[in-house]
Length: 68
Image (cartoon, rainbow, N blue to C red; front, side):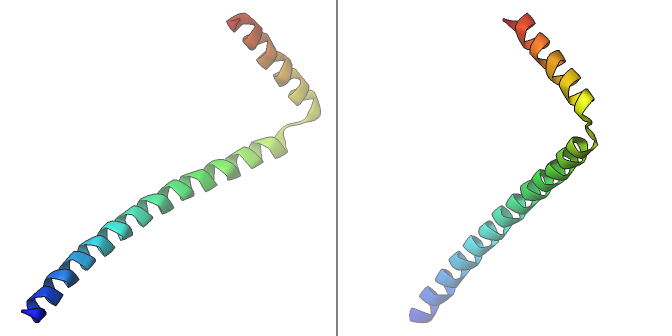
């Protein structure tokens, strides 16, 4: 009887471990996407020149004014 209980509890733990493993894999995938986006953003910011930056800011503010 005790052995059957231990076997059933072990199966439950294995199911929980599989679920946690799946959730960790999903979190890692999301983190990889986030890391890629950060690297891309850094690249874009490093390539941006001061004159372009000022022009882009003006364009952005103009768009915001049109929305209001």
